[in-house]
Amino acid sequence: MKKWIILFLLLPMIALASNHSKPQWTYNGSDGPSHWGQLTPAYKTCGLGKYQSPVNIRTSDIMSSKGKLVVHYSPERAQLQRGHNNIKLSFMNQDKKNYINFHNKKYYLKNLHFHTPSEHMIDRKAFPMVAHLVNKSQSGELLVLAVLFQYSDLPNKFFQELLSLRLPQQVMVKQLGDLLINPNRLIPKDKAFYTYSGSLTTPPCSENVTWVVMKQPVSVTPAQVKAFQQRVIASNARPVQPLNGRKVAQVGSSTAG
Image (tube, rainbow, N blue to C red; front, top):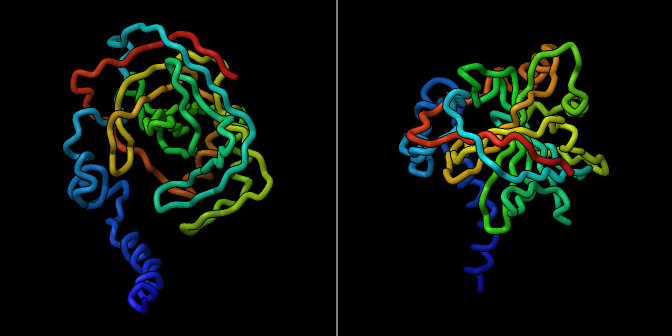
């Protein structure tokens, strides 16, 4: 009986040690993107995977396709999580009211986070920032909706509200109480998009991720991007990866809920 009690008391310490044993990856130097695959066997797909993301989308090579995308996002409670290389909003979504319906399958919103500059390129052009909205089906499949940001004199209201939350400077989880976050405010009016099969853009770089990259950028001011870079990270974009024979499709219409 005493052995079980001791083991129970040690479990939190074992878990903490396990978390600290994971190698720290960054966006430069010896633990940057070109070395992720060698940091630990758990990250080997970052170096060996053939269907990695992000990619450069060449508009002269894309194929037209028909598809159905319904974005059904509404105000939801969230947690603000600060990591080493990013900051993200994790949604509770307990009643599963926030989801994307893609090809008649529902993907439920899990979190959204930002990269600067954008990770995907369009004809070798990077954008100053991108939002990634990560969605997951009940069977565990991932769909990431990418919204590109383009410099404008008009500030992005959603992003400005995020900056006003006094972003934590240390790795931590910040509870937002009864504050409701509406991710639908990030979605552009024009719902045309590019889509292809890729991977997560951070370790472990798992593949079989459906990517939906919105064609129309949303506005952001240089001051807003600079504020993010100063408070969070100056640059957190993985370089583009080879397509390796994959085709990117363009779908010209969809609907938002």
